[in-house]
Image: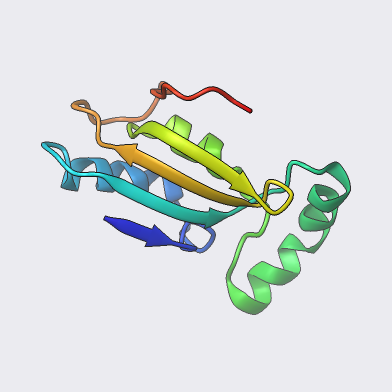
Length: 111
C-alpha cells in the first residue's frame, strides 16, 4: 500500500494507521510519503503559527509529528528518511501481528 501526503488531513491519523495494520495484517508493506513538522526550530515555529490558518483554508495540518504518529501506531517502521529540513518523510513500514497502538513498535534509529 502506498499513501502520499494524507496524514495531514485525517481527523484521527492513529486510527487510520491502525486500520492499515489490520488491512495488511498477514503480509504486505506500507509506504508513506508524508509532510510534517520540521526539525529546524524556526521553521517548526512558523508551522505552528500558521497551522490554524492552513486547517481552515485547505484542511491540512502542517505541523504533525509524522514519525511520532507512526511510532505510536501498531506499524513497524523498517526504514525512514527525512528531507527538506526534516519536513518530508519517506517511511517503509510493515504491519505487526497485534492490533492496538498504545506502545511504539519500531526498529529504526533516530538520526
